[in-house]
Length: 280
Image (tube, rainbow, N blue to C red):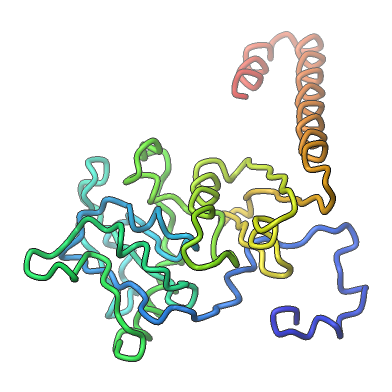
């Protein structure tokens, strides 16, 4: 109702009583802004991850998976042999969400894989939407791609661009302007630490593209785990953020106190309880 511009007809009872709203709702907007969305040329691909990592709206994704996962793939779905030592017999796909792409062309500009025959032809090729016979194919390929299992993080070196690009972004499809220079860093932060990330936001441009009701770009894993976000409207963002930090530390200290209590009551569990404490 809110996305449709009919929020004024919603009663107060439709609002969450505790002030908490669902995350991962920006994916429902589908603004269709791009006039020349990128299309992946798998034959030219060097699988460096740069185009994926620079995308301000997280509309370009990569996954590595096994051939058996392709049983129900659309005819136009594109893959290539994965160029990772830890995935010797798997395939990779780089896929765009055409309806979410903002058309900034940053992926094309940063792409290092250039055809020897045509300098305008790169791994990520800009294709006008009007002339593209693949537009509907890209939509169906995106739907199939998002249903594929996420790449196993335990096999990745997240200190490299190539590997970090394979992780699920838990910040996606924000309302930031096309080509925004801030959101790729937020997306990377959510990729690396999103399952236990708490964000306090000062009011400004960043609070608008991060949390404009009802389109929330902070997202979740398939298990419903993701960043928690809150914004302070007033000029107290330092105090607001500090209070969250103090609350987290207090809960942590309380857990440690409980562990100590259990250890004193059940000495046989001391080793297991110390392992919990050291897991941090």
